[in-house]
Length: 177
Image 1 (cartoon, rainbow, N blue to C red):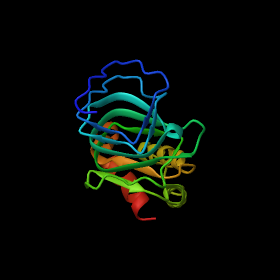
Image 2 (tube, rainbow, N blue to C red; image 1 turned 180 degrees about the vertical axis):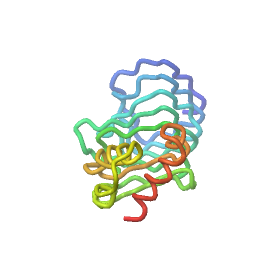
Image 3 (tube, rainbow, N blue to C red; image 1 turned 30 degrees about the vertical axis):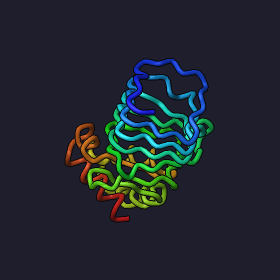
Image 4 (cartoon, helix red, strand yellow; image 1 turned 120 degrees about the horizontal axis):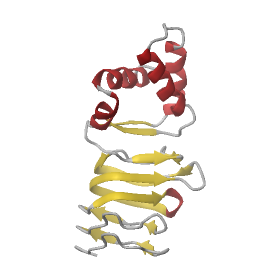
């Protein structure tokens, strides 16, 4: 499909298999109940959407995803997605296993396949440090990662959300463990 307009569309359980979707507008479309298998999204407008990880397999995104959530129902479903040519802007992964994704190639994104191990080691390093507001936040953020199967961060989004200094410390703790 090329240049299709599905803005605000209410899609009920459609199956997209071996599809190429190019320059399509999916802004605020209901995609959570859609099944995508062996599909490629190229330069599509995907803003304010959700995808179900258990209904999304072997999908490639190129272009930009903005305010998109990937939700694993049931929890820890492996996400089988290629984001190599994609910019992720405020994209969240809820209960997803990210160990098999292909992360974005640009330096704005950072991927930790083994994030739970790294987070536990980072927590062990900072647990003995004096309690202050930054350490409290770092501990809270790291604690959330101890049960995750992979984590993918957009550095600019993190800096906007928690400030450049906290982001720098957070990423350094994960990288250096």
